[in-house]
Image (cartoon, rainbow, N blue to C red):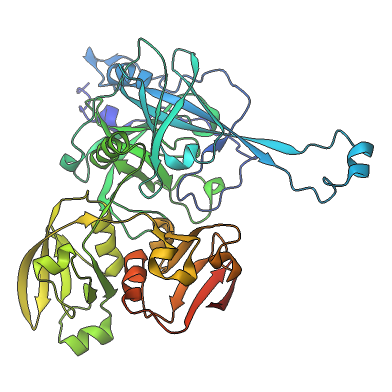
Length: 480
């Protein structure tokens, strides 16, 4: 009998038993939701199979030796959140006396995954959406130890969080250079889907640099056909050398997870995760982003025709802020940005996405079309303020603070400014502004984001009217 080809083991997969996840109802897992905590099950040996160790004396290739070293680095992350119940009778003394056992709060529990990236310091990487809003976070290691975790910081826009556990004898995953990944490279996803303890799925890199997905934040995803299911969030995507190349974060399935895996998994590149961790440690748990200091709009077919462009793509510059990195580089209104650092710019959101993934101080190589000619400029990113005090903009806004919209909303096409907080009794409160309002427009002029909102107040209007979205409604408020 002829020897089996070496690739047999890469194409043969151990059978994965079906799991009836009847308790889960997830529509479009973006990001893949942390799985609700389920009763503890005995560990299922996912690598065991009936294939022989050798055929005709030739050993079959196996991922088992690599996984034996890497799987102890992947942990289960359990979160608990106390949510106060809104009972209309809770404030009635008679009702409380008659029904003293009515619960005033409920406990939400969920389960995700994490990756140990520094054994000596106990650093564990996971997803922001796994731990956001949690009152308590605990980590269960592969050897069965369960430890309470300390929150160190997180970044909602890239969905990265860093926690720390006080443990010894940990095993960390070495971090690879994710920029070296190519479409077709073999990868393995390790995590805890549906609370089933450690599970391994394998596949290939389907795409790199994936972006433009509505409802997610800043995007530069690795796409893989390795199965990523609820509970895999925050787990490891590793190469065949057992090195971390990505943090599993989302599973795209328009029909929901009940429809089964369709091979559209997304992972955050390890290089991006490493950059975010460095910022979290440096900046007391937050990420400080840079900005070019310009406003743009997408080039559609109508604009392309008017500008004499052959291809309807790119970001048309509509405003350049004074003192910005773009202004210093010589960018002008009317320029069309078609590439940044060699990466094609399709529209305005793609330019914003590339800009948001770069740290403060980085210089971006801009390829620009101006009057039918191609220009190459270098613009340095300057620090982007995370919040603005309303009083610094206009006395009529005193007591309110404003922030940029979350990137998940920006990537869905939303523009405007978020009312972050409103002090009780302040002028802004008297003018009926509320936390959570979104300022869509104002009599000061047009703007898309926080920087544009600030720039619009260079000339104070005699009458200040803001257009507000509150919940599903819209209206205009006169600031007096």
